[in-house]
Amino acid sequence: MMINNVTVKRLGPCGILVYNDTMNYDLLVIGGGSGGVPAARVAASKGLKVGIIEKDAFGGTCVNRGCVPKKLYVTGSEFASLFKTSASYGWTLDSTPQFNWNTLKTTVHNDIKRLNDIYNSMIDKSGATIIKGTATFQSDTTVLVGDTTYTADKIMIAVGGKPYFPDISGIEYAISSDEAFLLESLPNSIAIVGGGYIALEFAGIFNSLGVDTHLIIRKDLPLRGFDHDIREFMLKQLRDKGITVYTESHPTNISKTSHSLELQLNFKQTISVDHVLMATGRRPNTSGLGLENTSVELTDSGHIKTTKLQETTCPTIFAVGDVTTHAYDLTPYAITEARDWVERTYGTGTHHPGDTVVPTAVFSQPPVATVGLSEEAAIVKGFKPNIFTSTFRPMFYSLAKSNDSTFMKCIVDTETDRVLGVHIVGKDAPEMIQGFAVALRAGATKEQFDRTVGLHPSSAEELVTMREPTR
Image (spheres, rainbow, N blue to C red):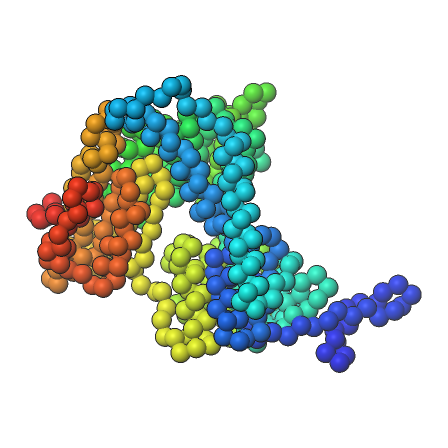
């Protein structure tokens, strides 16, 4: 019930009416992560009255529990290989390098705190109002946070996702990537269940730091959805690095003993380890959001049904990022979705990020980077591709006794000569792929690749010197 723009909340002690103020906004954003922050900032910069609701630290999964700490841990773990390789370049270390897990953990935590402060400052400067707490929908235009009701002409949901745990006996003993960053000490052994980004990245981190690492993959190859050649090459590289990989396997039970965890697999093999890390995917954070009080429809997996324009089934509610049914669960993609939506809704923009020219990288060891279509996807779409591939040892390892190799692949349409996809496994792959993403976005042809002078000596030059198709 509304009385002078104030909502009656409940009867307090002695029958006294208790009210909670109703705050009205042009745009309410729920979630202060990769999608929510740019949506709020850009909208506020246009003079709109914007509120952004966040119960935890700003930055979302990427800054606090994902991309940023993971990349820092990857970098920290890579020093082990650098120290080893340095000997072949004439370096002699006075003593054996020592690694301190708690030092890395503390410095990463401090850097995340620095980024949190930057996010808070950016939001403040944009003019958006920060609302701390948990949002619960009351209707298509109304959200409750604590004792305060907020209404808005439009509401953007950007609450992201959370780790998914399979329903097996003993699952309470497992950890997710969230807890892996906070382990009290570096384990002696770990089993990582999963074959995607997170699984491979943590396998690389722990293996490089000297942990006995076991990787359990449900399929025959890791990185489902990536180009088949990339997947095959990566599996060999993982094993060459010393990671024990179990393919076509999945956990059936976890039990705890006095000194370890016993992970049983589907073919009855049991692995004894200090920790079991579940990297078995993520699910949207829609539970508890009160969407049953709105006309927003969800999929069976809990994702919000959205169009390519971020529209939900409710005309006043929109969604961006991992909580939606979009194609890519990537931080830059969520940022692009948010910015494009604000420009279309409150400006003159017409863009949306719904195309295939989206680069992505797996910061595994070695890293994987890709943009455009895989060979399999190109064929499914009706293209008749020429395939160009190259496998070589990067110059960095030419003096070292190392199994590290680089694999590159280009997919080219035979009818138009347009480059449809570029795929790389190997040192510096993520740094290379960004420039080639621009080229694919611009519709570059293989002839234009071939006519580009290579930068020598570099691994990247291989992508403009592959002249003869492999098949």
